[in-house]
Structures are given as C-alpha cells and as structure tokens.
Image (cartoon, rainbow, N blue to C red; front, side):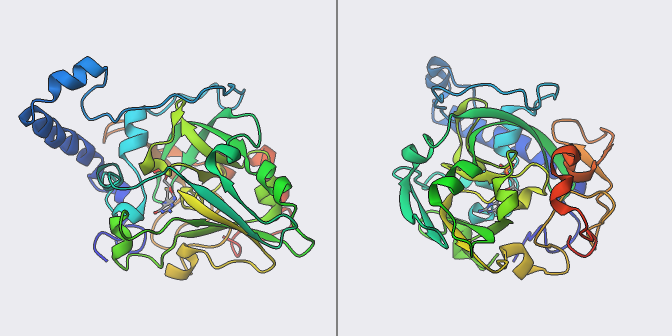
Length: 320
Ligand code: MTE
C-alpha cells in the first residue's frame, strides 16, 4: 500500500514530487552514457530520455482549445498516474517496458444489440480521428493541457446499439500481472473500472483517445486506447481499455470501492466541493516551477457551457 497517493496523506501535488522526473532523467542519462548509447540516440534523432514515437496518419485538427498553452510532451509522458505500473508519478514511464499493446481488442458487451470484439485498428476507423486540445484536471490538484487524438465515444456507442435497459457504460482496463507490475500488488481492486452515465458517454466532448501530440499514445498514457472526459477529474479517464460494458445499474467504480467518502461516481470538477482532505478551489499547472502561482479551478473544468445541462436539478454536493 506504500505511496497510495489518492488514499493516504496529502495529494502528491503539494510535495516535492515534481522534482522526481528530473532525477529519473539524470539516472537514465547516466545509464545511457554508460552503455555508450548516446551517439546512437543522437543519430536516430531522439533526445535522451525519450522513447521512439510513431506518427498518426490522417487526423484533423479541431477548434477545441486552440487558445491554450500546451503542456510539454515530456511532462505529459513522464508525470503520470497509472497504478498498474506503480504509484509514483515517474513509475509508469519507467515500468511499461514489458507491456504489449499490439495486437489489442476491445470487447463490447452487455445491454447492446451488437456485442462484438473490435480490433484497435477497426476502433480507430469508427470516426475520423481528430485532435482535441483539452484542459485536464487531476483530483490531486494539478492540471495539464493535452492535445489528444481520438474519436468520440459516441461513435462506438452507436455501433454497439444499446438496448433500452442500458443506462451506464462501464470501461474496464487491462490487468495483466505478467506485464503490469502494479497489478501484482493489492494497491487497488483490479481491474481498474470507470463508468459514465449513457448521456455523458454520448456527449461530444467525451472521447476515446489513441494518441497525443499527433503520435500514437505512449503506454504510460493508456495505450492503445483510453477514455478522456475533460470536465471530470482525471481518474475517470480509464487507461488501456479492454472491455466496454453497457449496464442498467450504476457501476461501482474502482475509486468508489476504495474510498467511497472521497471519490464519487460523477467526479465532476467542482471548485466548491472540496475533497474531504484538501481543497479543490485551485490548481497548479504542471510545467511551472515550484513557485508558480496556483490558479482558480473552474466549474466543470471550464466546460460548463457545454455540460452543465447534463446535471440540471442535481445536488452536486450529494452527487460528487
Ligand atoms: N487508468 C488506469 N487503468 N489506472 C490508473 O491508475 N489513473 C487515473 C487515470 N486513469 C489511472 C487510470 C488518474 S488518477 C489520472 S489523473 C489519469 O489517468 C492520468 O492520466 P495521464 O497520466 O495520461 O495524465
């Protein structure tokens, strides 16, 4: 249970953890140097500490988030939460080496007329791939701006044809102890499960991401396919999804099971409803230095115009 960030102690954000990635890079640099790989890396066009990338062909830019200042590729891919690979922010990037993302199929199940298994290549063709620049807010108090590439989740829902009984969509992550070292420990109740109400899943802002910065998604960010819901706290965005199940009853998600008083089903970003152990009124953008000022967090992470009507009449203190 060590380093169980969202459950015990203060959010990692407030500690000096932002310093860690630098330490990791230094360590890696020393290793690469020792192995005489520096020249090889330079020759291949990679900078030290960077993994090879694969460009996504055929995706279009969109108007989403054009005014935002992007978080760097390095920060997005080295400061992660992916407990299947460890609870430290730098551990996912370090520990994904054995994890295989091809071949990959996603099973569509439950209350649907068309249950099926969908290869990742087919999934990527369900709708035109589009770049969506989204502000992302982690429940721990930090935020990033990420240029995702993906398809609307609604295109997969339409393919599945939910029955009249389908009220919720459950997204289940891979949990392979052989290649995901965190899964060998009882950190969470594996597999990682997240879920949305069907209307949230159908909302045009909700996407299945397969890339970022125009590159195939790195494993630590949830390759080959992960959920992105920009008006909710980051933990709703389940990574490396293998099953999508349509159900009638509200699913118990992983974090609800782990700490029901702290993590609710909705998890809408809401500066007026604090986490029981810390305020949610402000956030720190990753990429600034330790002295950077925190900025106010916006209702629904700034997407209220698009999504507030989904929750009309609901008490958001109760349904947190
Ligand atoms: N998905 C799985 N399967 N396992 C996880 O531990 N962490 C969540 C979410 N999805 C997590 C997950 C949390 S707490 C956050 S903030 C985001 O992933 C982080 O996504 P990023 O690392 O791509 O920024």
